[in-house]
Image 1 (cartoon, rainbow, N blue to C red):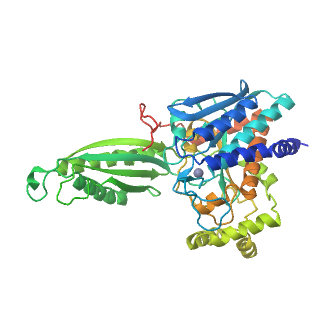
Image 2: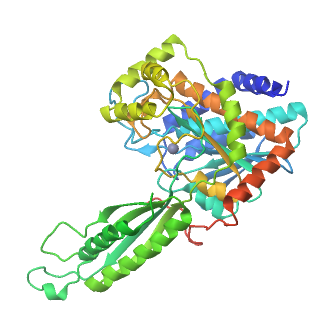
Image 3: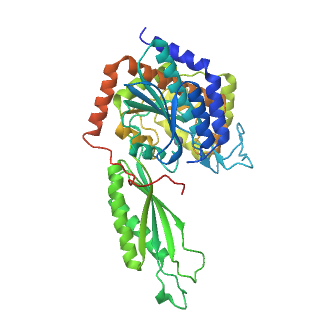
Length: 478
Ligand SMILES: [Zn+2]
């Protein structure tokens, strides 16, 4: 009975599920955004302390970051969690129409309350299993702030907190069940380009002014021309964050543009960024202004690990289908009705890539996609994750686990509304089981752990983490 431990893990998590759903619901209620996750961090730290973990908090200038640890020596199995909410997404739970909560700003549109709690549950359960079975090693839970818009993990990776891990695991709430394999996560820099000119009367003394807004516009034109000469898969998008004022008769003395620069590999992003710095300097020269360049975050691409993919996929297949009650399916069906028409199209397009005609007809009727997708299939892509940075310094395994009605878009009020439902909890507990079982298997089979490391070395092909954050950059809310 090689997989007896699956039953064991399943039972341990079921026995403790009230505690996990309570933590997840509490984080949903706190709905704290990047670097402000004070209560969300505290509730997890307190729980893990009560379970015998030691906790060190406030890491890399991130007050809400923490590492909870139990055990001794090698191997070190790490679970990675997130718990930040998104702004402007406040929404009453379970409501199928837009119902913002008046006194709230943020909402858990990406399901990070489930993500963090599911990873915490996996760490907690692996620890109990190790105690009960006399296994040696160390279990860690990394409480990582600000995944959204700040890449909180990249700071922790830069400062070496993941260096001694043997493996790290994470998961993401989703509308499908799928181990993350060939999926595309783009590496990503966020950079402010601020131009400084000279203000003057635009009609009375234009020759005395130098327009910072002109420089922003010229820079944008330069970037548009550069787009023709970028590698396939690169993406650059910008927002003018300071136009220099609203008075046409005043020459703007300061103007600013924020760019997201994305490409398949972090090394590609670095080279595009260098070229954009030249464009900015050119724009400054042409307009007689000066420019300051301030990078504020970076996300690296994910280094794939084939062995982790295989192990996690087996465990995922053991726990899926999850099986939903009639009530749960009716709940999901209501939400499937109220997703946007674009999301309905997105669901159709995804299903079009799957199975045969009969299976596809079945899938169109499903309110919950309660099956495991082929881990080699490409679904979506183009986003970024700071788990990528972790994967450059230690082997990483990840999975998407179904927590929402079919077709629900992440970062939407519809996702927020479903975040405290039993379908969301079920997905979170399933993810915890998959992650904990993978941990047990790696502890029981050192040869597998060695294979995981070898895959990682092979995949890197001699490349080392390019450390995309400037050494002295501090996490900030911008
Ligand atoms: Zn997310």
